[in-house]
Image 1 (cartoon, helix red, strand yellow):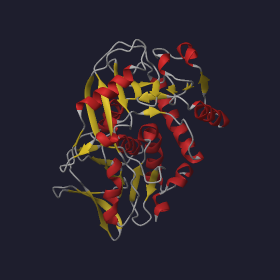
Image 2 (cartoon, one colour; image 1 turned 90 degrees about the vertical axis):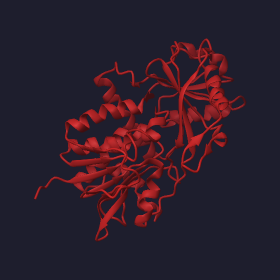
Image 3 (cartoon, one colour; image 1 turned 30 degrees about the vertical axis):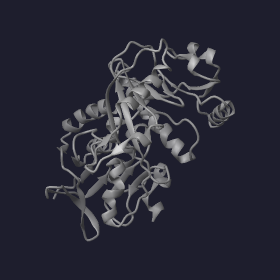
Image 4 (cartoon, helix red, strand yellow; image 1 turned 135 degrees about the vertical axis):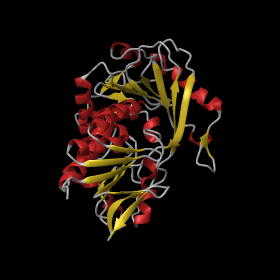
Length: 370
């Protein structure tokens, strides 16, 4: 009998892939199963802004700071990677919200988060490529923030996954967790193939609550429908991620931009087959709104866009750890999958391998809903 722990990971997004690689580093045997391809759901359409800006619970803030720290370590190993950069974050509110922005800045300062309150005319000296005339009153610049292209990060991690002997099962369809005596014993694919395991991790984004529901576990799901647009290449000097009243914009590899927001959610149609559509003119309107933020207002042309559910637990806080009702079954379900991608994989794999619960995940246990 081998003493190696066998782990089945459901989900080919950043949380599943990161945890799988950390498990392999720790000596586990890992089977990674995806419904379709790698990064085919939320990971493939995330703005992936690396931050802990604004106000949230202290444990969540601390976990996000640790998440950004792990990306800094990865960035330091090779700052030339165009899919991971730290150019700061710039946000502003609509006209008439000066006091709201000032209050956010004051809060960020009170917890030691690097935050600079800028007048429009000060922006150019702090971060390049921004059209300051788009800023109605004031803006906050957070120098320590960055962004990552998650599909590129997944590809990077999968090289190590394969080198360490991980087993990848693509296009497994909707899988279910199998039980033996009330304990997780593996997974079964849509076609009936089974993979036995000592531990199962469910990390399939907005579908996570549906996967654990047959096990008698209820996790509230607040996931909205969202869209990410990637533009055609355009010359620009933008370094920062921008979060503004009508568009969120970040640089993207190949001189492109990634764009999203939420004002057009009601224009997205979900079809009976599970696909989504949105009028082309709405996509172009988002691109036009984004153009107003960039120096020189270059014409932005959408090259592609993806629509689907953005994973958000019902109470907004992450859900990490073992299910109390189903020993051996762990979950990873969070809104901030990009920022937490590396740290969550590290901490969850540690729990799976050692059986010791990490204190930083104490308030995020799925048991809080039962």
